[in-house]
Image (cartoon, rainbow, N blue to C red):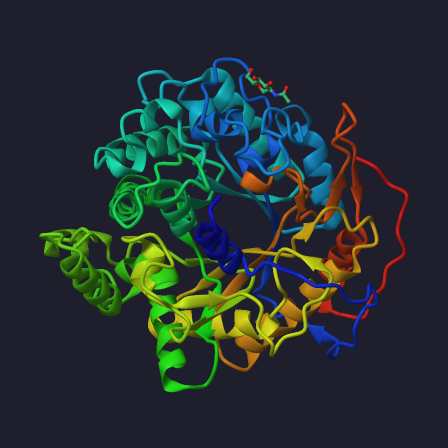
Length: 513
Ligand SMILES: *[C@@H]1O[C@H](CO)[C@@H](O)[C@H](O)[C@H]1NC(C)=O
């Protein structure tokens, strides 16, 4: 990865490697959770299932990605990971142990439709998800299913994947198969997880599958098609399934907060522009009252494209008809959040990022490590709890206070922290405290909070080297034995007492799943 790519990635994930004590820090008061707030835990198919070629499953773009040496930082791959395809019942036991209200999982498109198309439905693929759903329900856990969490069938990528406008047809066909097969039992559907992450990193860069590396062009083409494909599936659900199945359907967007690196007007403006690029580009077309891409982004990409000699903007236009078709197509704002980045134009120079590119279009530098914040532990996600409250308020104020479902929040560490993962408990305690402020003080309508992740798993191009789990997984062990970290016991207590007690310090228990 070249230096500027690394900078972007580092900034996006707000990576920092600073040491601090493993002591728990002093916290806020004990607080009751609001009655309406449901609590859950999340995973994604490629990150946990393994069984990459079980039955008639075909390869996904992430199987392909993992085969290229050097793509995954620690040289691991997704072939087996947590073996949840085999051991899903243990995952359900863990969820039951935690006492969660719901489980957010994702469905592997190439496992269900081996050709990528709906001409051939895998009976075993459907049977797997059907059993998972049945057993979740039998244990009193609500299934929340994501249709697309990044593992596109390779066969569809060979035809352009998300840059081919026909993806809207293919995605609709795939969704229909699942609404038909599982919609009698699954009542909460997420169409697409984090459009920015796979559009920019996968189509604009080489950092994620499918490594198209068409910066400032392919990523924007994918963005438009992702929005249209999402909207198509929402309309399908709305028109053909909602009346009988009575569920909800929406999108989930990464909403890390962007703010100015200082209080200077230029930096404040850079923070706002970055927020429009990072979150608004995907959210504005769906959630704003006007629809379409954010004005700041349209203007900036058009100007840069003209300067660069392009006869038209690299950001494809949305027609008035498309704007209307996409607007309002989500029953909730699915909100994923990990950290905050700080932007400045002061140190930005033309040519420091690829030209053209998304980063160059933003025209500001993201400063991951900000002096204002102390950075604890060997952290992948810098804990800046005030940022989640700001981001939740940004969504509330920008989009007329939609219902917000937090579908990912959690603490990633480089390497294992061991079972006594105090830094993770600190993170959850501080972030939940900020979420409660957003609900109780600011009036954000937040109805779900989801811990990412149920267990350590395959963290994309970081492989197994970055760990987000409440449960530790022994990847050396054939059985992939899972053990609750202290954070799992803390989360269990939070759910059982419906009380946030940041100083709760549960004793480790000798349990394995
Ligand atoms: C994963 O599967 C691929 C394809 O069969 C194979 O080349 C690779 O060696 C496997 N990885 C491991 C760790 O066995």
